[in-house]
Length: 221
Image (cartoon, rainbow, N blue to C red; front, top):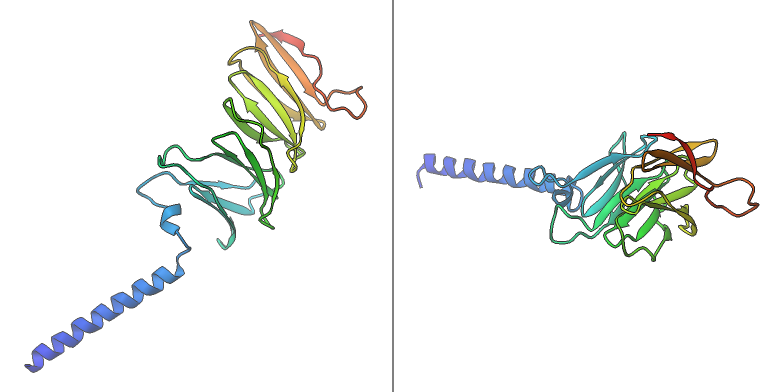
């Protein structure tokens, strides 16, 4: 072998070794299933922050909770999806106002609430199998709202235990509804024909019973 060929062979081998070492180091530093979580080509990953901005939540087939400042992985939850990437098994993910819990709603309308710090499931329901439900926390974090916009209706569950408390029908099929938190109560507004109604939860004057107030008209639309 000529000296020039030997030098070329040594340089080629050295270059390949450097490439392999860089690839190995890069792979070792990446979180597990990173490409399953964030793939710029698919566009099916989602990012949210808890209301207190302490945690960054990345989710598609896996939910990862990270420290929003350092990026350090705090907690990971497995969430199964079906074979259609644009129709996830996880229908909705909702952080609570305190930044302590995450609520997951799957395609069968089953809700589970997990503690971000401990990773424990602290509440789950098993009685919503029909309808088109969405989940929301009350501003004080005391209740979880199961809202079906088609009926429309709202069910109130305790948080984080998810025990059933009360429910109310709001108007007629696919009516417009909205709500607000005020003085520790939930005030729901809904339309009936050309009139606007409201109902309050919980209503006063029922002792320890938590119920909706009787709907009352508040004006014309």
